[in-house]
Length: 556
Ligand SMILES: Nc1ncnc2c1ncn2[C@@H]1O[C@H](COP(=O)(O)OP(=O)(O)OP(=O)(O)O)[C@@H](O)[C@H]1O
Image (cartoon, rainbow, N blue to C red; front, side, top):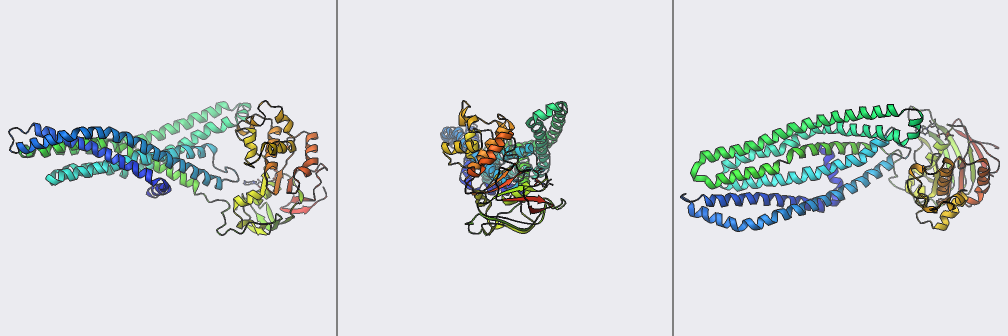
């Protein structure tokens, strides 16, 4: 637990200034609260001084305290206000950075799809688990530092006059301070149970809703609702387990702060007249400490939730990347010829190899048609060429440079891929297209749309290029969405294009027309056309058939 928490703090070091400022203001605010009660104790001690042996001294202290009371009273709310502002700004900055960090780590680790991870669960990690981390600062570090400052200040103030009384006060309060930290590891396990249950509930809701047509068509909404109910009940049970732990911590903390108060009262009774001022001070300080330490049980629960969130984040973020970035990148390739030598690849050790000793050459500027039955490995080859996966044996080179030594961002500037299930995102057509070429002008967008045979349809839309595509392109038919995705790939300036079934979803005439003009649309670029069959209008420079993990020249 400690390691995860320390790692989170390490990731926040870029915001150390804001975070430290928040802690400082919180400590000042808490000490101002303490000072207020110290002054009040002195005023009262001064008031009850008549007839006492130290009457003159006590009365003098009371008058001095009255003078200080007003500025401290004004300072306290001001410090509270600044504390809120600064601590929230610090949290906002730290968490925004965390989300970006986690998103990048996930993106590097999931290039071949979510795999066994569920979208709902990952969303939960990105949102709730990162959010739980704000508790680490706002509800653990900040109040913990303030409470520690209060207990230390109290020990010093009382200890200067009455060391015995200081011990009576400080020991139970120090225990109340440490208790949430000591209880946190066990509570973190309960917190993890809550986070897991939240992830499962999110998945139970998100999955049937994202595929709502399939859910309804299969009459499965009742079963989906039952799953939501079951996951909801599991979440409630996990939350109850966590709350029970929190309640024990809260009760023990309250008992310890009350023990300090009782101790101070007992001491006051025993000391009687000769230590009125110290006794009053001790009682007032015990009350002040109860206020600061009252937040600690909640701090324990927050620490547990943050530790659980941190562990889940790191578990996903530390999954090894399928293809590590090169430690010593090579100079960027100058040519764009692709070459595979003796490539052997299986998706997993327990899966049969897709390729065994695959040799393939695609000269720069060539147009290769890659055919093969379903499952032959056509898309797998594309995944290898974009370094979404790496071969277990053999080499792949681009312009003579081993892909293993080309950074993936560099490679993907040179090789663009229209995947088999290319997605549109919930944004305008223009924004979807510019994903591949952020600098593209409107004229570039129209050219790409025309080449993909969808320009006229977009021109006829009232909002034109600004038409929203809907989630996963839901505002367009499957064929239209496919052509928009194709336009996006054509817009990419990459010199190598891999087009996986580019004409899928097009009617026969449009398909033929598109393939006939493909030459012009991809002029000067290397094209690997992944197809199930040739229409005879593609005019490839080479035709290869993938069979049994090898590429065999074919005649169409
Ligand atoms: N991400 C993946 N994880 C595990 N196995 C995979 C993955 N992608 C593909 N496979 C497996 O690799 C083999 C080749 O699949 P691939 O998708 O490359 O074939 P394909 O020739 O593109 O097929 P199709 O024409 O049906 O698209 C299949 O047995 C498939 O189950």
